[in-house]
Length: 93
Image (cartoon, rainbow, N blue to C red; front, side, top):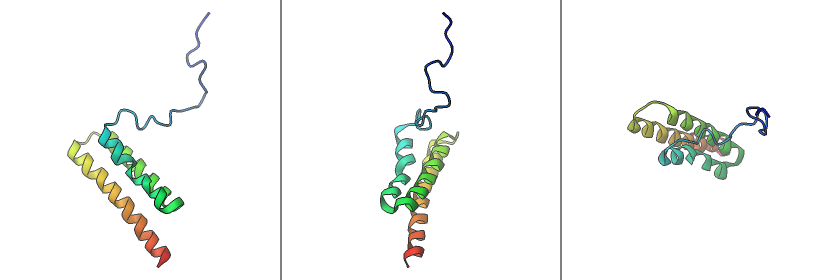
């Protein structure tokens, strides 16, 4: 009996955690920090947080040196929170 490659798998299904695999622990922590905005600001916080997570995952996969990577990823976290609180300030005040 001949084996068909990929048999038994859902066609078109992707591993939703693939972007997180292979990262070091500190890259994971810095990558997911912006998503905490979801708890602070609902849809607005979630949207900004998701953008921050995607940006940090992109930076984590780049071929930069570790200090530059850490600095860039911390900058994304800080920028995410600043954008969120600035928008909330404009919307409320």
